[in-house]
Image (cartoon, rainbow, N blue to C red; front, side, top):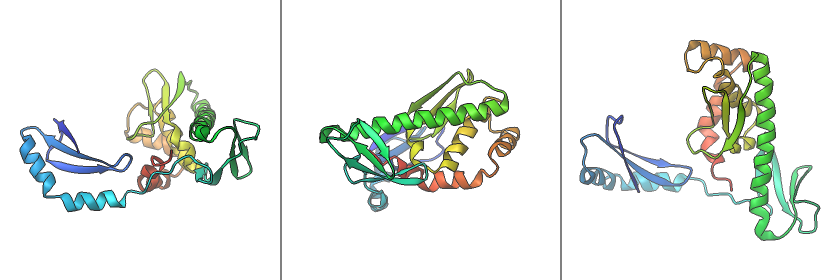
Amino acid sequence: MVVRRSRRARRLYLRVETADANVVLVLPRGVGLNEGLGFARERTAWVAERLAAIPPLVPFADGVALPLLGATATIRHCPEAHGPVQRIGADIVVAGRSEHVARRVRDWLKAEARRELGRRSHAVAARLGRSIDSVRLGDPKSRWGSCSAAGGLSFSWRLILAPPQVIDYVVAHEVAHLAELNHGRRFWRLLRDLIGDTDEPRAWLRVNGAGLLRYG
């Protein structure tokens, strides 16, 4: 269990993080560690139930099916294939030794994410008449994208595992911040002008987003 103190928290609470199965105890100002641990012990059954509900991790290994841009692609380890990684129909064909499969699949997915997110970001920015300073990828656990005041965009590479409309929503969301660096009414109006419906992709991320973190 991880114990965190928070000046902003108004109450003592527990949460179970789906991405890494961490149990987090948050202590607000004025609450001691012993009181917090007692609170956690009283909720042991609740924690066990939440941990049991977390879907298992999915390795990047031969025969594993991955969601990819709204479709399904299956990892196929073919040691003698030309490589290191090729997309052939519905397969992700990985050459070389078996111990390199996971790394090569991850690297390939990141490269695909960089290409897709970069292309879509620049296309949306062009519609706004804005320029992008850079597009970077990371693997954050709590956000799918961000935009800096200098015009730099950052995205989770795991978005490549999401449906295209969800990717477009996250991209448009961050690019819109180039014009509106806030979440006010003008921002949401601009975002709807760019992609239309925002409710469906937001709902998809709320329900399915944490599941993308279990791959690899």
